[in-house]
Every structure is written in structure tokens, then in C-alpha cells.
Length: 238
Image 1 (cartoon, rainbow, N blue to C red):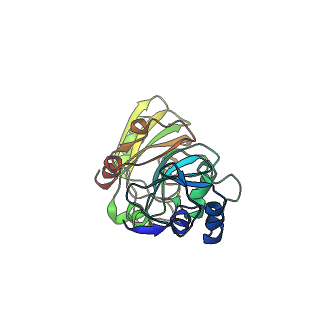
Image 2 (spheres, rainbow, N blue to C red):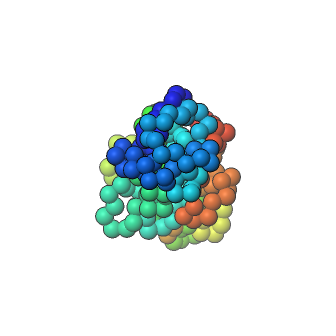
Image 3 (cartoon, rainbow, N blue to C red):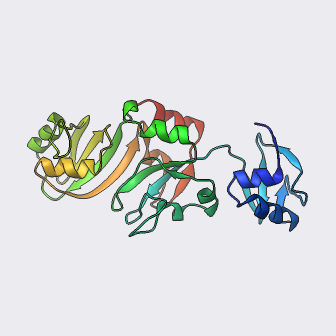
């Protein structure tokens, strides 16, 4: 961390253009350590820095790492076409600092979604070379059978894939529900695999990425949280 002028700090945290951030400071809308600051050129050490904008407390973060419990009918896109984008569930500042989803969930798929403005993190988590396992809970139209589980574990052929795709793990958890772990992250993969195996996906929720689970986070649908170092470590190894 290093010292930055207040206008640069505000801009880096997503409060708008440099010019707008200077206006916020000049208008007395920014406080540091409880003291209103009106000189945008005032410099502060960013390590552990907390500040208030319009009376709301913020902590300086070089990058943000966010977990969201995505509801249905939201698109994982910065330019959604048919449904609201997931960024509308987050503070406006995150859009200004170019926070984006790590991978995508279909608009009707719910569950654990990561978002960040750290390009290296996004690439690492999205790369198929990392083999990050993702756990899904699928509700099926027809009953889950031993034969269905066996097919998913053995691998099913999708029409646009050169080789069959297999689940890393798969087990029934109810008459019409199964848990399935995938590493590849192909387009509509769970739904297409279930169709290829002779069933149909009626509902889908992602419940874990790596060893980070939705239950650990305790988020209701539509809620989000910053990830701490301990939670981040659960994403590195499965």
C-alpha cells in the first residue's frame, strides 16, 4: 500500500471520475477518521484506511472479491439483454470500478457467483487448466435413477464436444434431485449433460466453488459479501 491523494482514492474505489470525486470533497461529503476533508490533494496511507462518503463507511480495498447468492432471472453480463444484470444487486461503486462476474450462471440458475475487479483472479478462477470443481444441486423432471448417475459419471457425448464429458462426482440426494460436481465449465453443461443422459433439468443451483460453500457464507438470495483471506484460500485448492 502507499499514500494517495483523496481524489485518487475515491476514484479507485468507484466513486466516479476524478473531477466528480474532487467535487465530493470540496462539498464536504467525504470524511476520514471522522473528520471532514475538503482538500482533495490531502494524501492518506491506504493501508487500513476507512472513509465516509455521504455518511456511509467504506474501507479502502485495492481489489474487491465478492460472493453473491444469485437469484433467478438475473443475467451475468455487464450488458444484459432480457433480464436485469447481477451488478444491479451490488452498490453502484462496483460498476464504476469494473467489477465483473467470474464465469457465468444462466439467467434461471441460482447460487454461488464470484465477482471481482482483479483480472488475474478472474482469469485464474475461470481457466479450465485450474480444474476448480463446482458443485451443483439439480432438480430433475424425471426421477433420479442409478442408471442416470452411472451415465453422468461415465461421460455423455454433447453434440459440439469432441469427447464425452463426465461428472467428477454425482449422487442422488432426493427422488428428483442430484448433486453433481464439474470442472470443465462448458456452456449450459449440467443441463445439457442431463438431457444427453435421458433426463431434464427443471431447476439448478450452484452450491460450492472449490471448498467454499454457499452454506458457509449464509447469504440469502440476492445478498452479497466481501470474501476474506480465509474464504479466498478455499477457492485455491479443492
